[in-house]
Length: 584
Image (cartoon, rainbow, N blue to C red; front, side, top):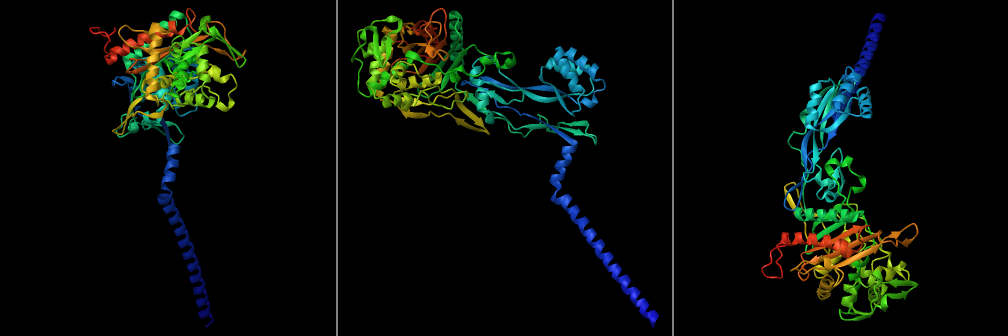
């Protein structure tokens, strides 16, 4: 009986132990199974990413960047296929000998050779050696047969017209990222999808294979948008050449010119001198990068006078025949003694002659008829101190103190272009108001953008109605008179009606807080349009610090004339004289 009880007790204990063991292994199996499900299903993507990070190195390379064209669809910026050299340092058996051989083959400097050796001896898995190489250099390197050197396919930005319109187009960096101009401002549209080259590594992190399945030749990637500019190459070239000739002739510091379509606001030319070649950007003077036409704000001087006169006419305070006493060349107002340029001594002048002879005193008296707030509003409405959000970037909107901060002398100074600064595009927009019948248009350098198969054309953007058509027509007639009989005679072209205004602005010395008195510190300018009574384009010219001659009428007006002759040819504008041929 006792043995029977012991056997039953042992059996119960065994069964109990077996139960707990079964439960334990069942739970263990469940945990392992859950972990396997977790790793292989729930966390698969995370773990795969970690694995890739350990066994692959990814090098991003920019895809095909969109082409930039001029208005006639001539290429201004395009991508070329090229190859870039990189090293896998651990594969290089003799770093010193290999570096010496490569440096000699590529004509590297001593400093470049030392840097090259440091790359070869580094512990990095990947080192760029030379990006976007010339084809002949690629062949030279391949002929060396140095183990550990490899090539990656890339694209290189190329500007076939070299320095033509470079200040508008801009340029890109080594990774095809836009740095200046349209290349920078429209970078998000121009750049294509990034593509990657993956370097496979072994357990010790050493590169063992290059996977080119995602190379630049793989289809399916989105390319960058195509951008068509408003630039007309024949006008752009003439503007650049005319500026260069005048800057060199007068030993000037710089020169700028803008040509704008008066009906659309499209910029047909934005020229500057000195220029730069975006294909050789690293060898160019940094001061020449970007656009001075947008980024350099200067006191405009007398080319601003038409705004005060247009405001007076539009407010019906004056008309072209109103007589203004110009005080025989000397006029004291608000503690300021105002003199005429070149010590002219004008007596009574009509408003027409005030403009034609660029009388400071006459303009001051006209501006003083306006309330200060009204004059300030007209300046802003004409585009002065406005931010146009230009597609070339680097816009300096200049300085114009709010009316609440005007002193007793501000209205006097501003009326003839002092105590404020403006840029070339603002001046083009301001003269466009007079030329197109009274509307302020936003200047643009973009004609259309083509992205994902869709074309997005530029549309004329009217910002404000500024003056009446009657006022604009009166101003056009008066500005024609400036060229026919006044200070702008050197802008005249036989057989054509030209309208415009000269400017010769003293520059302000921020150190002495006074205006320079010498003639060699001036900005000579001319602003106008043609034909006078049915304008096609506005042309603004400014030459900074000319040395051999100084006045806008003798420095900037001839440049205006030369550019205007090309405009006449481009548009086929007929002469007023029957039988005349186009100006050549």
